[in-house]
Image (cartoon, rainbow, N blue to C red; front, side, top):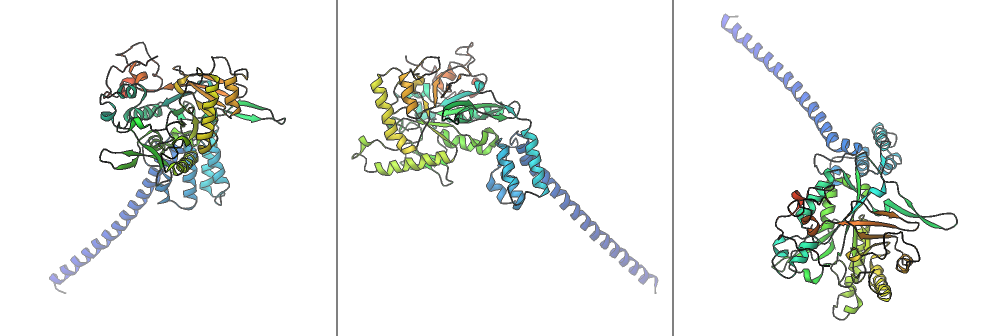
Length: 468
């Protein structure tokens, strides 16, 4: 073999060796990359979804924790644990434990570990004091400030009593950041019956992590009055394609669009993004009057013959009411005619109550909550008794929860057969007169949010004071 051929052969061997080494290195590198990537994805999934769920601290990353997202990547026990995590994020640890322990995967190690985590967190929960649960309320939300504040005769009323979309969302975010959790008024207290058939009210057990603050929310007058047409509000409630309640809004060009145009769908959106903002699926209380239609639909028989679709509207309201209830919303009376139930004559009071029962409750189903129009009471601060004939009549009609308007942080009164709670109006009037520039001594809202950060500066100022 010549010297030249020897060098060629030696070079070929070196190249073959380098090629083999590179192949081995590539395989090792790819394997390490796959393993590390898998570990990262598992850690990322746990950090953003599982850990917040079992710790009771929510979803700080702001990722979409929807079941639909999970169903695309999870199956079997993993999918079931995901569903249980959603329940745990809403503080329903008992339901989460039951879901897993009664499943076909109950004996799997990962399922047992999840149950252990839920039980561990559950053992640290603290019982809420119902006397320190605040209740905030809104009217229909302003979607378009240019139309609402256009200088017409309705502007002052909107400015006083309504909240803008941006204010509402900022309030939600602030309350969420401060640890508030939306609860049901029925979880605060409820009626029980003893072995002798005697009914009484008892305090509920709202169990939350240390530092969480329960609150109740309601919305008055979800009726979408005719005078609001063209002023930047939703026009009616409808059932969305996802089976949840949403809103329609009429545009200037005559078209109608569907979307999050009032409190109900906006709050739903927020809870879907922040499941730990709702205790065991709680939503707000939605109150209706009846004389101008319910949810944007004519229902009163006095309009029969004028509106040929009245029976269709009544059936639509029935379906909407059931949709609201199915999705956690609680329905309430705001009287039939938006009357001051404490000052009108007793005969008018009875007539209004009966009209509500006949024309609205017959459609939306039994309601045991009444939110007084104008916040006006039917009694003083003393507990209700059957000697109060108006209370006795409302109690006979099935009402058990009675809510006035009170600017104090808390006002809760638990009676033997009912509960009363004061509500705080979060509207233009309250916010404007809580601004340092308007009245530096007012601090009515400091526990909920910073008014200077929330107040919508597109409002005309000063906001007119409420007429007496």
